[in-house]
Image (cartoon, rainbow, N blue to C red; front, side, top):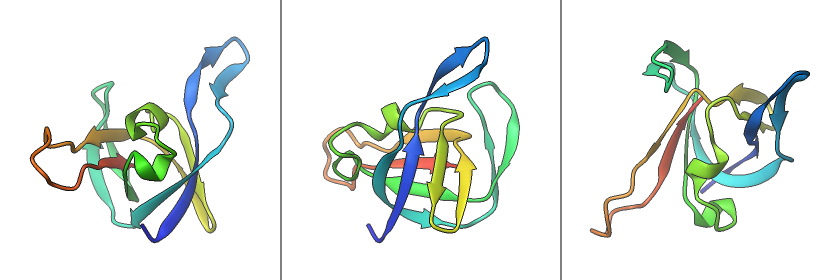
Length: 103
């Protein structure tokens, strides 16, 4: 995976605002393409980037645990917020096991 990002996982909300875990570097492929997604909350949102990554590239953690909705993602020339993520596991049939993350 040719690119790197840093993800700060959104862990919750307190009276003073959103709470994020410390940043974690992740290897990935970034695809800077506009699109639309339906968020978990049912809102349609415009996206400007999709990230593709694997558990191995996330230090052994499952990407769905890191890239929760609302998490912050930064890279050398930009940043974004996770709007949606999809687990693309095939149940052991041999395809590339990955997660797609829309920012």
